[in-house]
Length: 218
Image (cartoon, rainbow, N blue to C red; front, side):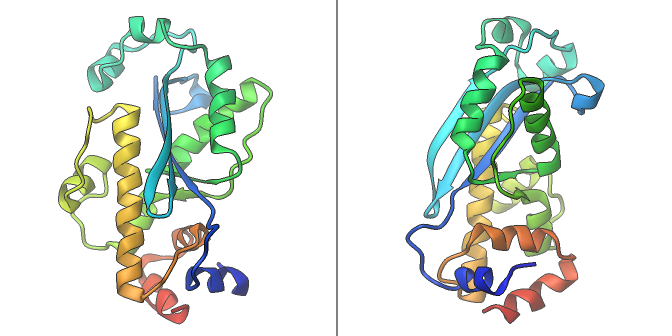
């Protein structure tokens, strides 16, 4: 839950609100604990209601790409073999994220890969709380038929600018989803600005408690 000082930040005008970095990985499987590795990354820095910077790269982790991953994403073995090595990409990605807030659509998935790959290189991420745009969407936009990224994008009129299941296209749509949620909260609850910690606080609430909580900090 937000502290009093953090609550005040959600309803005040700020020139220096922290940035949020929306992260998306494409991977060879579902879990780094089971040996899955990353094949592509995109990170979008969100500041002042827009995407202001991005980091995008294929990644060579010296692993075989399963055929079903190629069918899903279009990422081939040749593409990753020619990509920059993970030992180059991850330090650059960690520098890009810095100590900003992290976000992802299903944040636990992307964050665990980020931390696992950093750990393999003896590195640590400095990012603040990870914000899950799936949980956030369920709590702020209840009643949608699906909260899968492609389905929620279609319902809200958010267009993919590239191929779905590629990191850059997915990260950009997820970033625009977060901006849609921010705009919705400002309109519904008359917030002048929204501190990223408010999103993290909403993530920790049950959906039923969110409206009353937001009204209490107007």
